[in-house]
Length: 210
Image (cartoon, rainbow, N blue to C red):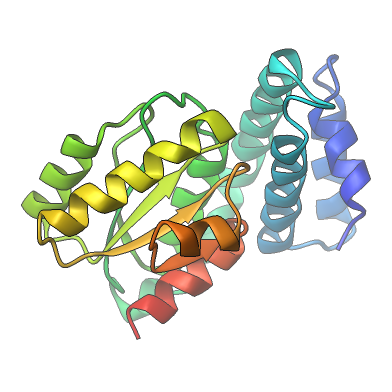
């Protein structure tokens, strides 16, 4: 596993060239797509944790562009790493970034990881309200609802979504994650699981479905 500082530096590079070199060096050194995605996830998490203090909107924009560039490089290699394809679909997961939040890089990584693991993923995009989450969960019969938030100002909406779904009587497991979320907050709002990053979120999703 590479140094977190190195991936953070690559994600924050305004020349937008270091991320390509970073991926190339890692791949040439035998790093797997799985490991690279994990590094990318941890780098984004680190930047998200520092938002408002060390990092601001400009850094989020640059890191988002660089993360998308990394995904473009890695996507063609995903056919070599399909953990659950032979076993069929493991379950159905609705994924979305909550209302007020327009950040989607972490969510995009999660979707790739979940799909590779054998889950059927329904992506609702960004800025999703509680009614939409509930409607889609009901329409699709989803097993899990995965909520994402990068900012502390928007994570509070996760509590509203969770409460709304519980009061609606929908039998769905709720998993939360993103730069603004931690295990204590997940427990506080009554979520069934917390994913520190995309790799851990896949493991938690499997555990939720037994």
